[in-house]
Length: 121
Image (tube, rainbow, N blue to C red; front, side, top):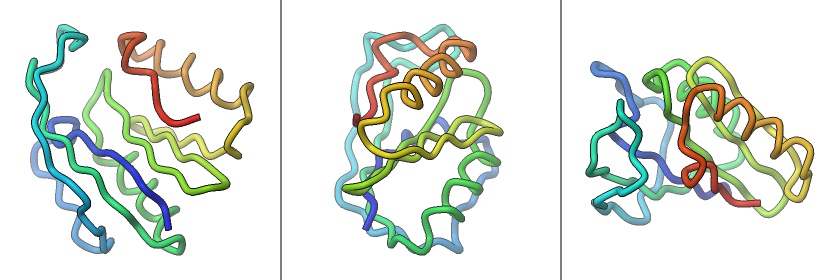
């Protein structure tokens, strides 16, 4: 089972993720002080779980659905991490510092603020 976080405002208008069963763990709203110029100051956050066999499909769907620039979603299990940007998926073993740094560098290229590049290690 993978656990993840999706900021609902990160999805392009018209997006529908209906073919992947997600278990909702929590829905919350946050005032975000580190929002970039293109991001709203309040975010709706969906914390979810997804079965292992749906992980790759979810990553592909999110890569096709996230708005540009400046957004990503992430999810992980005990062994690996998916970090998904618009049009790009990073999948690497937990603890792989070089792969994490590569994904963070990609995020910086999308002008994602440094405090937001803080997904699970």
